Length: 70
Image 1: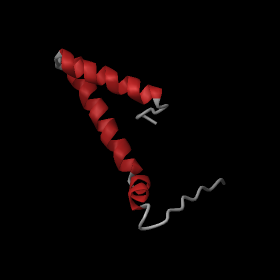
Image 2: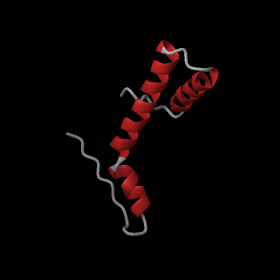
Image 3: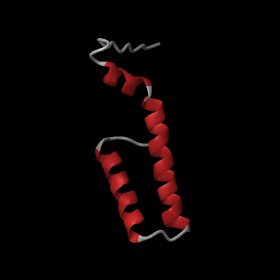
């Protein structure tokens, strides 16, 4: 089974370490945001601003090679 190890020089790289340790929380936050925006656009007829932000978010994630549903 493949194994990956991340190494950080603490305390200098504490910020990077915290980002790596909390990546799942960031994923969950983005997932919830995109899901809520989709719900508002699809079911509540949210305004154009929400729809533009939803489209922007999806394009940004796509450009970065990120799928929040993965």
